[in-house]
Length: 552
Image 1: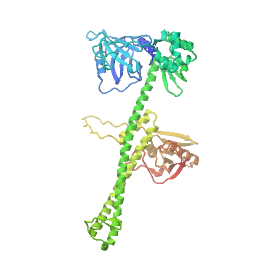
Image 2: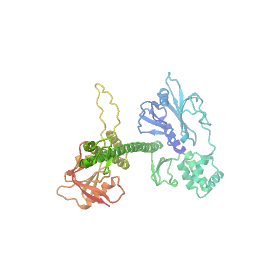
Image 3: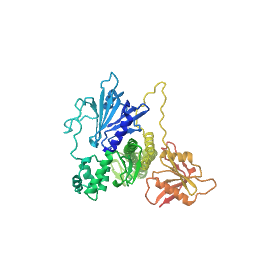
Image 4: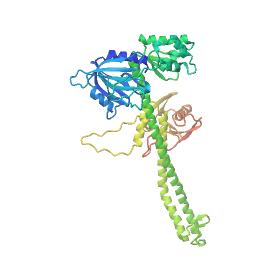
């Protein structure tokens, strides 16, 4: 949040929140505080964030999840700040350090006046709570002398503002300064402006650099125009969109900075709330996606390792089954065998055993292998299905774009691979908490008068098979590749044309891990031949009868 936008935000807050009562204090994130304020008409929430990447101050409508126990800074503010009223907001010109003054009218209050400083300087952002004399009551984070050569921040010390930067103050820029900055071609004009002038953000620096690219004179004029807009509060807050679809919050339209779209808002607080809500939601989605990806990767590694072990057991049992043939060979040639032999016609023998004992040993190995083979093959099939299922979740995560789609993946993981935890004892008179149902996502596509259903997750695939299909409908799925179930609804008495089947097969490939590949085989079966089997995980089915369609 740059100095231009912050000025407009503070101006709006000063008008709307004078005398507002602090009713609640929350700390939803490590470096974020939310004050719930009673204005006399309704409750509003004021967000103060010292997050290095998104330090800001504005009213917010977004409700964040709070930690089970409030952190130390939050506890202190709850004790001392709640029930106080906002007296004023202060902001020096072109600065980003906001001071919020509070006043208490309670006779038993420990402090009659306090202030909360929000220093919104990127990686140096701080939240510091001080008393009426300027003594620090508590900072969000203590800064020790060995951590900073500029100032120490700790409880009981007098508050010291950051020293002014050595750069040129924007309203004090002269034509000579503009010429000097313009001459810094090696840095790039936009970067040179940021490094030389106090009061400019990245977007406004790009705007001034583009407008002043023709020489020191145009550059000086562009900087003077920015200063005029700040001094006269000539703002039109909104969100700009760059050609790569990235969005930035702006104090006014900046077309010369490369923004191709601009969404205006009535107030700077509304613009900030909308923009930073999007930023927070995108960050939460990225974190959720990373967590799911890590868990799926670990599960795949575990299940594939199981499959390797079971396959090794199967190979050893196959060798054991050969014992029957070896035993028969020894039986037919007992007269040629004697104790002490180590082999016979390539068959290993135990020299300590007699010919009959060696023969019986191979027969025993064959019987054991035969009895165990059925168990091992069943286990191998179960593990292979588990690997396929986790791979389908991996494909589902790759295709997920919205929060609901990510939540559906998380719910499936929790339902199918829940961690082993002790079940808490039931409380008398309590009610059973049921898990939230997994969102079944099914898309509908209309093609040449036919309805095609596409499952977007495994529960959606199950819904297609169990609820939405009729016996004569056509079911499609990529062969041996995790992906969506596709169902072509067959109207009564009508045949499904070849081009519709090809479109269904194309959709099956498009919504699978084979997306982008060529010559992919796709199962084609009537829905009557597709069914769930006992113990099947979501999305897994058995096909009794099918044909194959190749998608080129």
